[in-house]
Structure formats: structure tokens, C-alpha cells
Image (cartoon, rainbow, N blue to C red):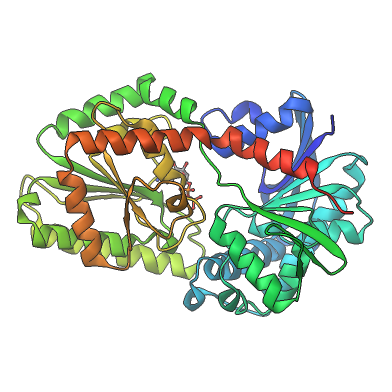
Length: 461
Ligand code: ADP
């Protein structure tokens, strides 16, 4: 069996990743199966270091080797904050208005990808299978190929791929897509992402479509397919029943015995549609006053990328909206919105999901959205809550029994929230059962096996 090499921006120790989230666990399992190497940035930023250089660290965790590289401040700021999160993240989430096309960032992005490739190359064995993750590392395979790497290399994009005309706003769009042809397999979250890739390469680079999934251009053949990422449903259900999950459930259930709980959980990111969601909640209170003193929105928005101005601005907007609703509708003994700008421990989160009558997962654009799947996994099948889900989340392609909404339509979303609050038990049960089957049939284990099987089978000819 070939050894697996995973390359991602951040690396986590499989032995310490219990409870760290499905992805870390799934990749850890894939690596442990036949021994493997996990390679990426160490998370350390060296003040005043030399651009394009970084110290390498290696340690072992069972049969998995973890190798990481430090980045100097200049490289980190241009590669991570600048190009990855200031250009690619907003554009790939359709937010051209928020992109910062500073011409200086691309140099750092290339430099770090070259640095990573240079450090990884001597560690590779001829039959290693390489799996690169996400938008930080798009040119990784091209850099490795330029150094003579002949290994099979797959890439999975965790965020959406936008349609050609939006992608074309990135000054380096042709270079980015050409870089993708250095891979053998491209995995996307949703069918719509594959369609965007297909139409881009057809229109912009005149690629030959060998079939629905295989494209030839730049002297190489690449296969592009959707592999919707899932969660570890059993692990999540177990967390719901473990002590901390249960304690959380019992405490909150008592409090919400006579009130309705609407729940939102995410990083504080502009892709998540938070201001629109809070406005929809306000519309609900306005149009359906029976919810006043009853429906309470708990919005947990954990701090994220605070070094970027757009994120600081969003925080202010959200906090002022929440404050205004509480000022307008709050009573001495009831506040409509509880906004929490912190992480909730992964062990307690499932208990909170289980108490919620309605989950509001309403991103303006999202590659997949795992919160939607976690909410389903945590429900009591006898009395499940309702998932209100944005049609612009990748998860909407799978989770058809959710109440799908357009988050830009504040009025329509409020109507759907009211429907969710009023939904009869039998319909809640029916929808939940179907949703549970969907997240079970394509869980995180299915995802990694499906990707790695396709990678093992595809190749150049
Ligand atoms: P993204 O990758 O854009 O953050 P996802 O919904 O795909 O969005 O994944 C988010 C993951 O992070 C989920 O596993 C979710 O449980 C976790 N998470 C998000 N926000 C919080 C929070 N405030 N506290 C604890 N966990 C969170």
C-alpha cells in the first residue's frame, strides 16, 4: 500500500485530535491506516525572519509523521492574511466588494507555496500518494512538478469555486487554474463547483472535455468531481450523550421549557450572513408578535481573522444590530438576542443543538457548512428541531428536506422561520429522519474513502 502524504495549511496531531472536529479525525485515520506524513505550516510566525525561508520541525505520533515549517512575518502576512484570506476567500465566496487586490500579496503566496514544496520534496518516496487541501495551497502541485515530482497528487477545495466571470476578477485567475492542471484529481464540495470549473476551463483555456469529469489542457489530464464533505455522525451523536453534552442539554432545556430557542453557531465571518439573519429575526418579531417574549435567538459567533479590517467592521455591525433589537423588543425578564462572541466547547455544543427548536444556518455562500450536519446528528429523533438552511450553502445540494431559504430575502427567511416554529411533530420527524439518512450515507469516512479511491484509480495516460 502507498503511503499517504497530506498537505494542508495547518497540521493537527491525530492522537490529540479527539474532539477536534471531523476533518482532523478523518485525515488522522487516513494517515494512520498505512502510516503517513502530514505536512504544513507550524502555526509559528517568526518576527523579522527571511522571506521564503522557514525552520522545519518533525515529530511522530504513532505511525504518522508530522512535519511543519515556520513562516516569517512578511510571508505569513502576504500568503495567509493577504492573498489567501484577503483575495481568494472573498472572491471564492462571491464578495468582490471585500477583496483587497494588493499587488504585493501574490509574491508571498507563491513564495510560501515554493517554500513548502522545496521542504516537502526531499521527504517524498516515489509511490507516495499526495493529498493537498484548500485555497492556501492551490499551486502546491505545480511547484512540486517543477521540481520533478511524478507522484499522484490530489487536491480538495473546501470552499466554493465561483463562476468564471467572478473568478476572472482575480488578476492571477489563469495562473491559478493552470496550477490546478498539475493535479491528477480535483475534489470539490458541490456539483455547482464542478460545473463552474468545467465552464471556466471550457471558456477561458479551451480545455478538451474528455467526459463530464475529465479535462485535458496544458498537456495534462485532470479529473474533477464533487465529494461533499461530511461529519462523523456517530462521534457527534456520542458527544450529545456524553456528560458535558447532557449537562448542557439539561440546563438549557429547563430554561427553554416555555420558550422557543433559535440557534446560530459559526465563526464571525461575512460569508455566514449574520446581519441578514438578525434582520430576519427582527422581521419575525415584527410580523408575528406571538413570538415576542418566547422566541430567543442564541447567536454564537466565534472570533475569526481579527487582523483583517473587514472582520472588525462586521463585528461592529452585528453587535449594533443585536443591541438595537434587544433595545426595541427586550423586556426586564426577556432579551430576544443572546449574542456570544466566543467559542463553545465541542463537547457542550451538541447538547445546545439538541435543545434548539430551530437552527439558523443561513450563509450568503458556503462551501459546505458542517454546522447544518452537526445539528441534524444531535437531534432527538422523537422530537427533532428544524433546520433552516441557506440555498447558497453547499450542504443544500444534499439536505433537501431542510427548509431552504434565500438569506438575502429577509422577509422570506422570516416566513420560513415562522413555518419552522409551527411545524407539526410528524413533519419534523419525517424531515429529520431523511436528513439523518443523508448525513449518514455520505459521512466523513465516506468522503475520505471516496476521494482516495478516485485518486488511486485516476491517472495520466
Ligand atoms: P467554516 O469551516 O467556514 O468555519 P463549517 O460550518 O464548515 O464552517 O465548520 C465549522 C466547524 O467549527 C464546525 O465543526 C462547528 O461546530 C465549529 N464551530 C463553528 N463556530 C463555533 C463556535 N462558536 N464554537 C464552537 N465551535 C464552532
